[in-house]
Amino acid sequence: MANFNEDKPSEEIRVKLPRGNEIIGIIEQRLGGNKMLVNCMDGITRNCRVPGRLKRDLWLRPGDVVIIEPWEFDNNKGDVIFKYRSNQIAILKKKGLLKEEQEDF
Image 1 (cartoon, rainbow, N blue to C red):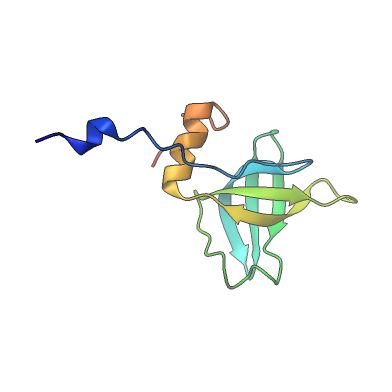
Image 2 (image 1 turned 90 degrees about the horizontal axis):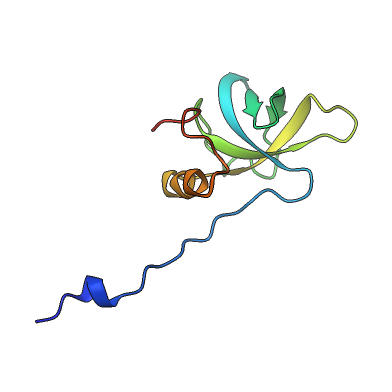
């Protein structure tokens, strides 16, 4: 009897990456309502919000890894547009896009 796990090629999981001016960040603190502080990979802590179209879809907590889009007119604020799941975070770490010491689950 053959072991099917050896014959199966490893599946590559696709992960959404930041495009354009989007940045990966880690939520530091919830501020109430739909606002939160996000520590971004470029070293800036931004006051971010969840846009109304995503408010019911994204459940966010401190420590979650997200993609944010900075506002054009104020670089210290932004919108949260995507939340990574735990298996996607592992792939980001493997690719070197997220530092190991910043996020430990």
